[in-house]
Image 1 (cartoon, rainbow, N blue to C red):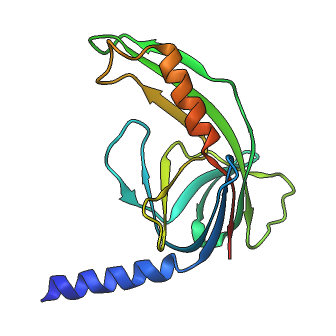
Image 2: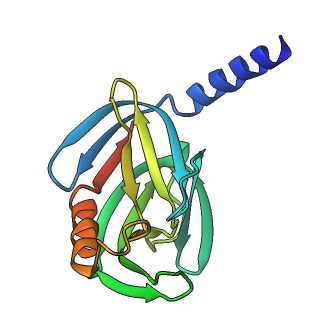
Length: 177
């Protein structure tokens, strides 16, 4: 009985943390609006997700850990070219392609510094919107893919296309209300 009560309390608290509405505009032009139910994150290359309430950022030389509840907007600014490399620690040798991106955060309460707040969180985020079938995936710092499991079938052109597709369908702007 205590476990059920604890689970209910955690679920209730979790729903209050993400009870904000958000409008997400993707780079492909699609817009998704609704109540944010939860945000999950995973390290690049990892399959294990965990619920999160924070994101790593920097403002000049200051490292920040911001709560999503304290963020007004997240805006895409630019991205680098796709770069690819091999990792010989794996047998067979694994190939990777990646692209870095630059996103700025507009906090709800602005600080004294005029420098932009830049996301430096290397995780993949999954934003769950009430009523949506699948979460919105967001790569705010780096998109990275590999040919793991398909070493003999996927080569650099395939991986580069995959990174470009993920970038094209990535987030352009989020406004939390």
